[in-house]
Image 1 (cartoon, rainbow over the protein chains, first blue to last red):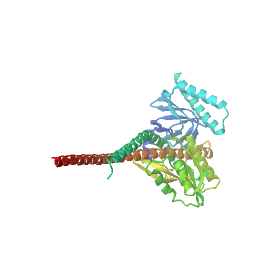
Image 2: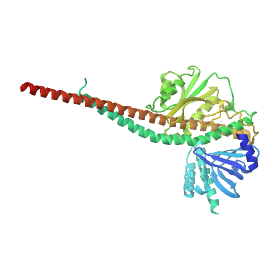
Image 3: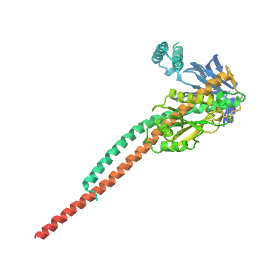
Image 4: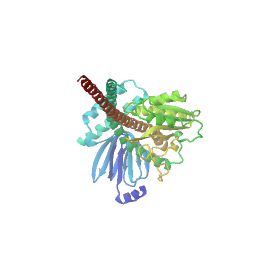
Length: 146
Length: 289
């Protein structure tokens, strides 16, 4: 089954982008190009990329589909790239159009306030993760305004 | 022969019981919807994680992580995921029937949920730790359990960790199941939620890693295990509420049947009494005339 899919995709020259969070499957579409926020900087993925497994950080994903760019805000997670598929597992994924700027701003302020308190390592990790998530949302949203 | 008053009293008491079970059924039904929703929406993530890990692990054969180390099994740990409360049909007893199959001397139990810890303590089995989880399981609760198991495995206290839980199949069907947890090489890929055939052998692609294999797998493996426990807690919760809903529905139906039978009996008795009284009056009148 997967083999077959593989061969079809080579001809079609698109990538199947799947973004899954613990709550839902956020995104599953065929796209022409994806840009990911990798741990060592942005990564552009085209069809037939070498198989690659990487960690991603909170930031923005840009997707090119039908010649147009779309943006999503994501949390940290993992990405698996196989040349025909990009599978992203992350804590959070929100499309640019559904980001609530006021809410993200509020979350950012709350997280920053929390970081000032005394916390143990695990809590610090959790809070900085949510801070990074809200920052990512804000970044994506503000880019849209421009 | 009970008097009409006795029967009336019994009807009243059964009615009270029915009212309570009906209320519990309603509560369980609403919780069930939420729990089922949570379990089902977590499945795509779990499935993808399994696929990915399977493909990656197959493409990285020369890499060894402490959590993948396979050892001869001298001691094993079993994580038993049960409910906190009873009144959910045969769910917990089915679970415990599986639990007693493990060898008492070589198995250490870790429990999540009060019923399991009570059972393990009562049957004098070794209990290493007990955890709790809320009605809406939280990722941090799952992480605590998973971390504890990983610690035990890394330190060599146990050579294998299994999880025993009730898998959610449908509202009417939940099955107690044992699935391997550690070492990771033992894990069969979870196709549908926590289930399915091995993905570990499927992949043929040679993966590259960025920044490096240690970094990526070192982060991915613990996360994978934590999430696996989380998904299992969700499945167990969905099973619990479904099972309770069904048990309470049966109880309500039974109570209603009993009320019906008792009412019939009551009416028969009442009529018999009236007939008897009429007979007495008419025979007395006939004797007088």
